[in-house]
Image (tube, rainbow, N blue to C red; front, side, top):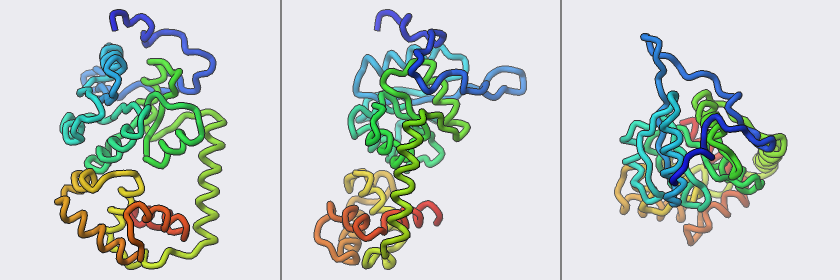
Length: 259
């Protein structure tokens, strides 16, 4: 990226952008009056995007680039960098999968998805993956900066269209929980087995689950065998379908978050 003019943080934000720098409050100050920058790690398989964002955001006094890499970057590298916020390109499903593993290793890590299409399925995928914020494909550097600050304050700024989609999904999940009985065998699962099926639902492989939980791959396989036996199903791919069909997905997720 030979010129960064088009990515200037001070450039005019287009009217269609729903996230703007005006939503972000000033970063906290150090005792001596200086700013405490928010540390970021950037992940994208598009090298131009990755390096361009890194270069532009590094010019912001309120931000610090802890590192950047492609989606094959080991999650441990992201966590060990000390980053507070992970900017991840979700143009491919691997982006959300990688962010899920990183958050499993560091629950306090905030995730901001970039290059998000304003389509209901993409927005809902971000919400279900637990991201703290997102920037649409037509977003600007100012939008990214604003999204980072909002994520650090546990706030999400979105358009009325996105809000409607989120509330619609919440209502649907609530109705399913009320009207359907728990899936056979789900109450017999251990806390660890509930963790396993949550990661399965997020699309993680056995190897990725083992890495996230810091256990052996063989241990994950043993847990999977027990889960299949208790739920009385034959294949790993049937777990999420079985739970959703019996209205147990929401309760299973709740057990993990509150235990």
